[in-house]
Length: 425
Image 1 (tube, one colour):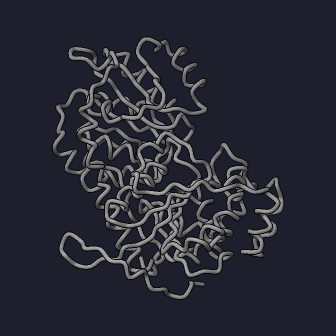
Image 2 (cartoon, rainbow, N blue to C red; image 1 turned 90 degrees about the horizontal axis):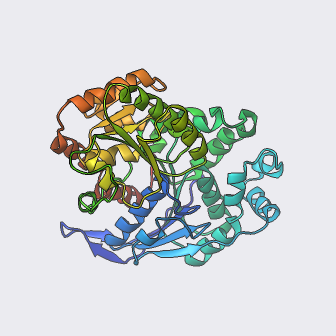
Image 3 (cartoon, rainbow, N blue to C red; image 1 turned 90 degrees about the vertical axis):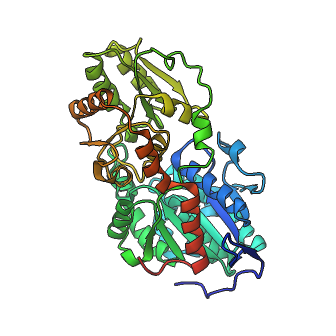
């Protein structure tokens, strides 16, 4: 059930065309600013909203992460206090009595949801005290908590929830016991329709959410991620001291992302091993995560220690993208695939798995890069070789990437928020 419509503050600004626009108070809620794609999206949106004259609060369960320093000084960071899990569960049940079976059994509620749930009380107090115009959440668990906080606060507030990955993937991921996740689609199906706006980052994520949670497609708006910033080109030209990126050195294949099963960097290593058998080439994988020991072991087993580097997380991956011969995304699935658009913006040719669902959108079905089947190293190796043998077309790639600019995405979000939400496709 929707909250009654409320008037925005009478505080107004002027758009570039001279028309009056609403100046909103927007609160963005997510666990932290850890080094992931969703966190970067929310950071970019927060900064863009500030630049457009809106009042922005960033609500974090943990005031931490490598992106904290990149947040606009015009945004206010608020760390939410945690309470006991028992207290938090009681609040959630008060907000949604039907969730009682799902929230009271510790073996059912995943630990990641537990951590986010524990700030429900403080989020409720924030909403009641500050009364922002909009609360925008990212990812499933923060979105559920945001909607419960709105109900508990009992104040006029519009909530926009955003999904960045496939809901069905949370259930069917082989790394997780499926029976522990069976509660999630019914919980989302019961709770998300209370939101004033439901946003998906790609058409595939929108379709999956509609199917898995039985939400009408007209209620879900698709807004591609804000990826390409105005300073990206400048960052891409920044000096790079890595010894492999010097004139006359062998070409470098680049991968960027969390070292996680989803990203399937073992596939990239296997494909690179095949490419390496026929030519002098090197591989750099930027990112950090729990799969590092396994990847380092695979590098040794394949005899690639002198040709593969895993430097960890870096603040400026664009300097690498601009100098790499080819960027490769080997993922099993992606909600969008921010790094694909970033690589294009740096003029770097792309090879990506044709995984669900974002890369194919970004590459327009293969018109702007190579799409290969998921899990097939031979096909990936062949595509990498094709790129290495072909001349670059950087301007064409950059033109495509401009469609995924931060400004364009921020304008779409604000258009949606100013319109009052989504009740249509």
